[in-house]
Image (cartoon, rainbow, N blue to C red; front, side, top):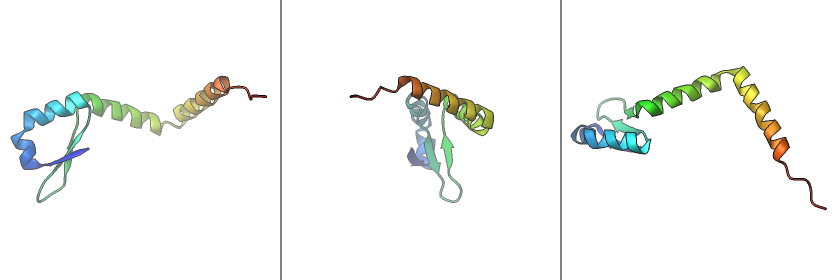
Length: 81
């Protein structure tokens, strides 16, 4: 993740926003006297939220784990003689 100062962010707002959207990479913006913040595209933020929701669902994670185990069992190569 790139990091820039709030002044550089302000001076290059249009370019930074275009970069964040087109490259799907967030940018961390630092401030002299305060907390930093992150700029990311709405599409990427929504994807992150969906991932967090899935990771918080114990039943969904168990289902994914079972599906993965079945997939691995089907794709294993037989031992060579």
